[in-house]
Length: 219
Image 1: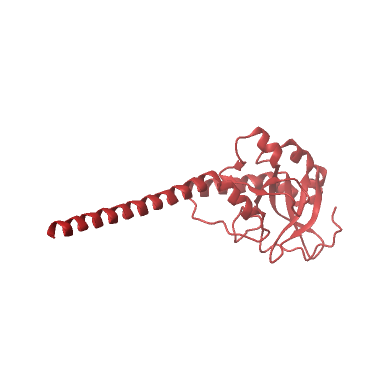
Image 2: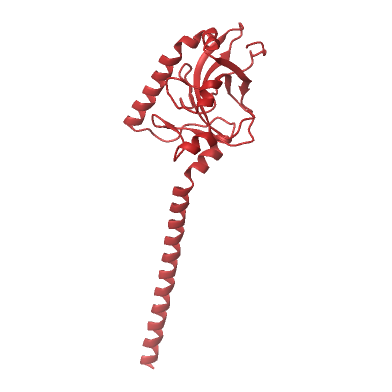
């Protein structure tokens, strides 16, 4: 009888060990799957987030190096676009208004996009030559320069580069097609160099920009 009880205990112990091992293996497999999916599809997640037309914060604390690079990029944009405070200078250099005044569905806006089609068609990423300069219409009918936007057609960029564009540590957002601009899929990076954005200097939408004073008269 004692031998039978000992054998039963041994069998029970082995069963418990097998169950514990199985649970551990399943947990490890689930964690491995999560890591694989995160590493394989990170840009797809960014594309889905950026396609939303609602303002989003720049999440996470930046390292000192990232802060330095971000500040340097904002300075480059300011230095390269200061002359465009007079919109007539932008017009003379090939920028033209497109898309009207882009406002958000809930709050904020992107403002008036003056696009240089030559820069867009070139597909070249140059911090000193943004494809777009951005203005906010004022109540007195004037335009205030508030930032710049780098825009790259996704298919053209992907054909020549192994990965999505990045500028001085700032990753571009991917807008899928169809989109409100009538464009094929494109990468974009806004730099709010001339009007502080509480959501971050590189997010798509600015909560304190308004299209209320836009009457469609600007060329």
